[in-house]
Length: 390
Image 1: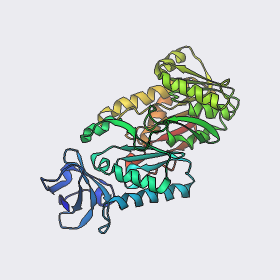
Image 2: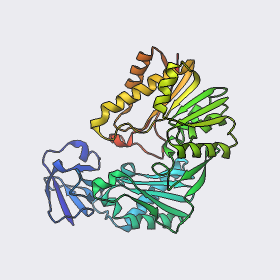
Image 3: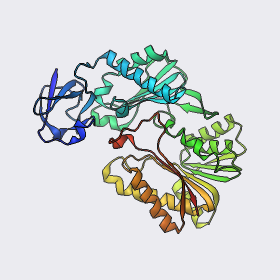
Image 4: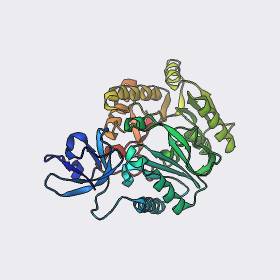
């Protein structure tokens, strides 16, 4: 077995359970070790830490898969992990549509699996997990007998691991547009062409949280993507709903989703740059009862964190100005580098500049099928806030 020995002085992060081992934390590693191979990790005094996959060309050189001395990494290992993850989701009530595997939070670093009815979308975002893709597919087939499995590895992060971007079938071909039910509503998921895995399951619980504040309201939704929040608003009794997105395909899909639910007369979607629209309509002093903001991530690296802070402050400031006094702002951030306390600080700064007072209604995170591991910041990424704007 390949062996990695850590430096004498390492932080408690690794010993306390974090699965990432950086290159500057390693004292000894065999030169012959190839990327994707599994290695045993030891402290400098010979204590077993765990087993994980290695990529010498990555800053995160080792990602731990197990800390059990007697647990080998093989096909059966991945079957057990997927089975355990499925049992966990079932206990929480996530059975029809859910994130089955959420990377490090399910002890399978850099593996994402989303379940849409009887179809699955896989992302293997690091070399060490990509090597085991056939075993992962085999485990899915054994546990679920799925109607189809699709690979969405068309993401730039794979290139950092020396992997090509690619997507395609990992099962017999099938129609990659499937219909799912969420909170009693129908939505189309485009596994081939949609963003990420085709649908944002992490907000499925949060979409129910708007049901009381939208009744009888005129609602504006910016960065609406395929209209899930907007269609929920219409379903929960909104008088009118306008959704904005820069993507024509997203707007087309949103309109289709509205029609699927018989809400096309309430929901209207517009292909437009939401940043520009918010800015212009603030100048025009337009007002809505409820404004919903669900932007994409503003920062992938710490170097861009200040840009993210400025971006979130700007859109939330404009969102507040577009809310009628006593109305509501629904706002989200999926940038994991912007942790909850910082996000709330940004909202407070925006409120101060907008000269509006805020009354917090709800502050939530992602749905529980995307588990948060305490002390592992990258698993605690989604912030969802509802405030009354006074």
